[in-house]
Image (cartoon, rainbow over all chains, first blue to last red; front, side, top):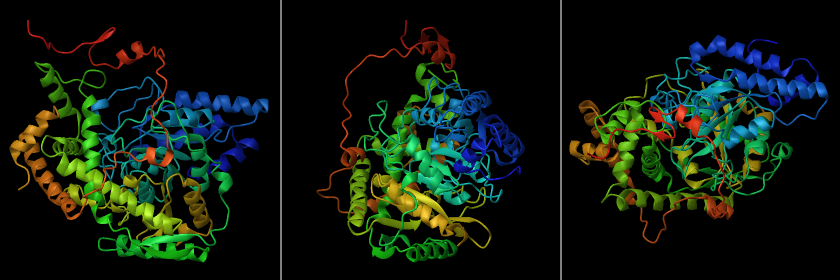
Length: 481
Length: 99
């Protein structure tokens, strides 16, 4: 076995079944890889070997006993650091949660482990999931394994990079405005942001509650499908989780795409898109047509308002959600003469620049006299954006767009202007506002070797459709375009 | 100019956030850019449009209501272990009531 070999979920199962490797040896192999590369890439913030080896031993015992294995038996996974893991440090990439160990597991983590996955550790991310480059982590940026002087995208950059660097077979991330899909695109892995309500958020540390979702990274749509069948579904601990039945997503792969109508929004190919990205997306659309899809030109007229609406809604909700970090119950405290002074100093020093910027903006748009002009207006525009999607899905089965208008950029290249960084989220925030599922699938590389991601949107709870399209795209060589 | 230094300070006070002078200046500039950009929304006619507060009920028809059942969590010891200034079973804070 090569020290950098890619493992997929079926490959793990085949190797375990054939007794070519034990689960314990596989965990050891992944920790050896992490040890070798983490100093350079800065992907993992915490490792959980005790827990991973204990799980490996359970899997090996089950194999020895000849028991039937669950779908993720022996699969090494990484978890974004905004998702709670019992007893394992969970910082959200922030100083304000330094040393925090959650007293419980997120439901998604419980479900992964119950299906046999082995939790390797926690991945670096933009602080409280706020960012598009991973440069907002208090623990330093993650480097893109494809090109180490480039960003991995964000905010789930560590999870995307862990899969891309073969330091995990799969990973969980979270997506509020593109934070799973965009790093998936930048690192060249398959990344799904499922429908709002599809995956329980119990144990996900909140950023913007009307937008936050848990999503998955893997080497293939097939692996994403296997993960989704495990983590999706109603959870009594999360009142926003939907009781829509969960299909066996992997079993739905392999059908023909013949006759599927793919909507290409004219409004998404205007100024601002990198010419090389455009070329690769056009080639990706052509490949889908070759597979039998019918291209339909559509309009999403409210797209140009999505960024403005998103940054009002997301920051407003963040300013409220982040009020809980006050130095009383968890994390470090900076002393003050009064309670208020203690709050102010703890928060002033514990939060990083981007988080403070968003708290100030969010508090402003919610403050007396501005609520109607900003937050309410943003929510009304959100209605129009959701309507754009609903109307589009009356004419087409899926919508195809670039995931990001640009490939991965260099570290430090875009930090000076936050608004410019926000504007690059255009293709992902629309789907975030509408609540629909979107998958980013590798669609070739630029001339300098940087991955490009093609995004496929489906209607709400249409994960099966976007997965089966992404799978067909991969099988037809989409990655090599 | 959409936002002044005083606006930033007022909002920071509302959010219990201590900011340095340099931060106030930087954020004022950034927020000015962002709020100017957000003005774009005034181009959109939203008369008669309902605000979208959350998307799940519309698509899944789930009710957030459930039986109110008391379940023991039993995590006090573990929770207090992570607190900056615990005194079981409490979190201690600076004095809030004057003598």
